[in-house]
Image (cartoon, rainbow, N blue to C red; front, side, top):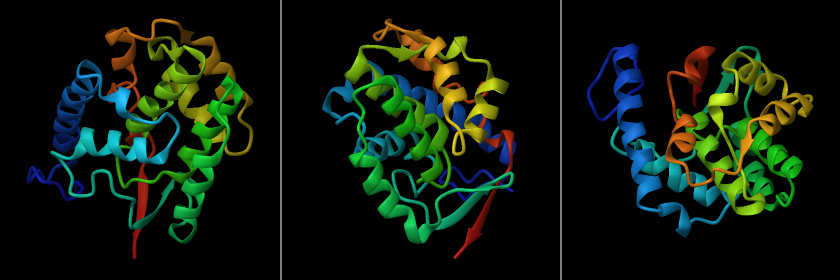
Length: 201
């Protein structure tokens, strides 16, 4: 079953394909229209803006904090009752060094504020912080998908692995459209790699 969507698509795989097509088009618009120039790096308000822009043609909940508890594999993301407080704390986290930025990224992944599309939105958000603070971005084409997903799964307990993987993929090509678009590549970093479970409240 597909998530309820504005497109009227009922098959999950059909929705995933259309979602990828639309979100890539919208991501390109974000980049080409320099909309990032108006965003404050590292703030949840900026992540909300990114998410809304990518998914507003597909979901009513684009840019809105989720109203369900989410889990993936054996891991439960931040419970709803603590989610807003967690996001406020993430806003306040330092982000002046690479390590601090990745620690912030890991915490945002644990928060997982949206019902769908967290990975793509948060990777763009991460690159905005890296570009603003240290003049680098991640070249996602240099990041092995399996290594990345496993490191992200382990990152709430130990973040040294994800830091190592992402640091090795840093580039100073911060204005490269090709480098930027790798972060939104849904087929490469498919969020459905492990099934999400949602508990409707």
